[in-house]
Image (cartoon, rainbow, N blue to C red; front, side):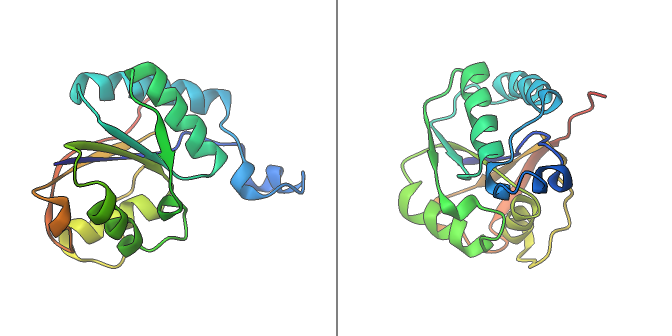
Length: 166
């Protein structure tokens, strides 16, 4: 089973957005963030030809990233899940995958830092803190034998790809 974790693209700066008095969950991608996401989406399409499920955090920047990946990679519609919000524990996403993701062979999760890298570190070694630094529009792939058995230390890292566009 292939689990791809994709960090949302560059969003409007938190401090400048705060001045608008809108909730941080509504903070959108920048033009540069959209462009990097499209470039990384093309790389993803070449590396993983078939993805059967896309999951996204319900935050605007992740939704926009998932939508761009859906278009570039010609993927199915995405599902928004709260288990991908920045404050969610790794165990919550693991539980969702155990109960609802078992029928899929390749799942793409679009979310935030440090949540995604903490989840990956948990899957790889059981660590409660991240030892991975996933850049904006960066992605990594975990190989997990069976989602029903997902637990700390049960995954292997297939690849990690960071954007290099300046």
